[in-house]
Image (cartoon, rainbow, N blue to C red):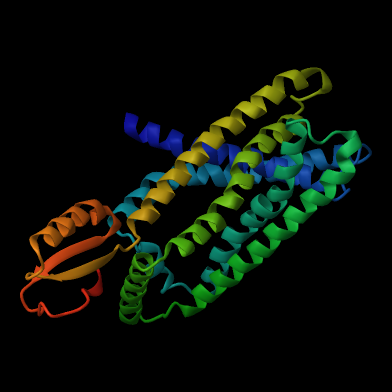
Length: 319
């Protein structure tokens, strides 16, 4: 029971801040950046932002209620979701796409704009004299997140179209995809891993670290808690939340690097040394073997190599 409560807290407190408060802040901040929210229209956009917050709150409550069933399913059937999609109708697939990508658009596109806009104000970079700088900066990030969103949407549509309706065929394809993914992971180079980590964690820094700061900052204004006379309270509180999410981000990045590093194949250079070489040479080889073991260099002796060989043969193997 207590473990479930702990898991729910660790899982859903960040989600609540990023998606419920963040949904409100995303609409609120985006409307200001694009010039729709002005002092004359603030009474219009406050109920609009709160309406989105209520929708995201209902979505959040459903996620909390469904968490025990979903975690149990993911534990026992790693590919349950993919196999279930094979039996979906086109209408059901359309529903799955819209239920995923409509919230994603608000949270990651509008949210990306609002995150930069709000974070800049919290840390004191955006003041009335610098608004003309931060508006185009925020919009630029919004364009980049919109392009990223379109790419993810296109890939998701392609994935849904590739799902066969035949169950047995689907199971075989699942196994092929699993083996293919495992092979790709095992054969990833350091450059590819660095690229993948950058693609994943650069947006996460903005959406979750800057975004959590902006979410608290914007939500507090929408609900009327942040006013000119209470800014001295909400600025340090928003920054504290941002620091907590920064620590969470660093931990996630560290775990991802560790997991990626474990998947890098080690190239082992096997140097075959003739047994007829002088004893002094063998001692040098033994010394090199102990020094280069962590570098993936191994040495072995063979009687099949003639002592007249002028060069030491070497071959490369992969463990």
